[in-house]
Length: 194
Length: 109
Image (tube, rainbow over all chains, first blue to last red; front, side, top):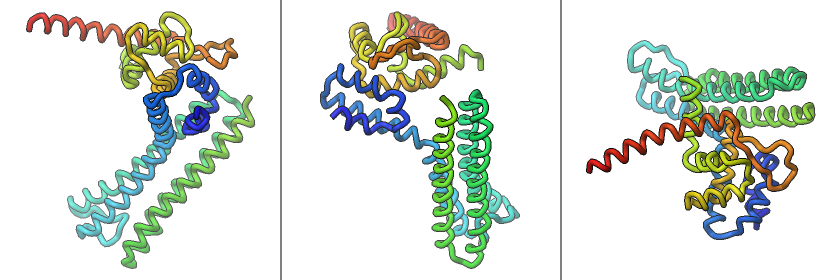
């Protein structure tokens, strides 16, 4: 039972706190309230571990939704970028691009935290963190620009639904690639550092 | 924002369990179960293991507590850091003002 409950927690957390947490569970004993408390805390930690990724996915979805609304309102025929020739079009463009800017901001802030965390590790930082963060950021930037300009061409052809699906799929593929690069980076770092 | 305000802000975001843990560790290092027992005996509040370790994780990430260095025990003890002590002092000072105000206002009712 204790092992099952422990497995609900993220692996990184278990690696750091698993043993002592198991000892605490042995001392505490199990009741319905305790189990509920453990499951609730595990869910919160799992959510927190993917919080930034979820923010990026939601932002990109919101970006697609705002663009669709602008299309439906007749503010543009050329989503995602259009000339802000009047206040309504300018507002529509601003509202559409805002979630995209937020997604990029989230990515850059997680990179900043990551680099701050590993800055003291000498060679590992320069050999692993810098090149891989640069590559993963370029992947996300490429995905965003492709999503913006590439699917804009599809929109011109009048296939709005294809655009929505295409933009979301590109965003998801980009996020998966970024996650994969982050995971490689973590493994390499742990190999380089004691 | 001053360091004093930043420390207070860090702590206030974590809610009550974090304050209780810092208060418990202010009398010396303790492991998880000893903390729950101490908090229960002193305040009557029983923290579940999930809540306790959720708060411990955040406090350790923020550098307000840290594990005792030379302990290889499975029941790893934690101690309050200087930063944690400052944060706790700020929290207690601000709540003392609120309590004093509350008492004055209630006396006037």
